[in-house]
Image 1: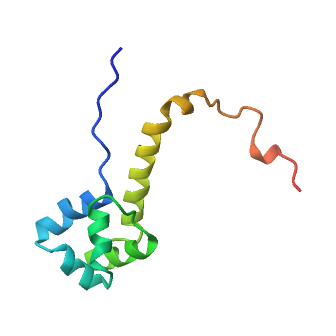
Image 2: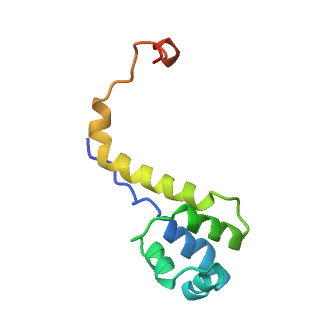
Length: 108
């Protein structure tokens, strides 16, 4: 059976550019100035060379009027997809624990 072809996961930077900056006509430089970060940070995020941090998430969420954590959730979703693609074969070998619930474990 042929391996299924999938598209690479969308990076938070692609989401930022395609769904926010481009439609609103905001440049990377303008965004950086508005949220008080170096322009290189925004450029690297958009290029997929830098991950979203909690600091950047809070700034972007405030600027775009989003709930705190929006950009971090996008980053985690991306990272999880990438990890799954790399680890699928190994993950298949891992068997879920069946020795009882965590509550049954002795403490201390």
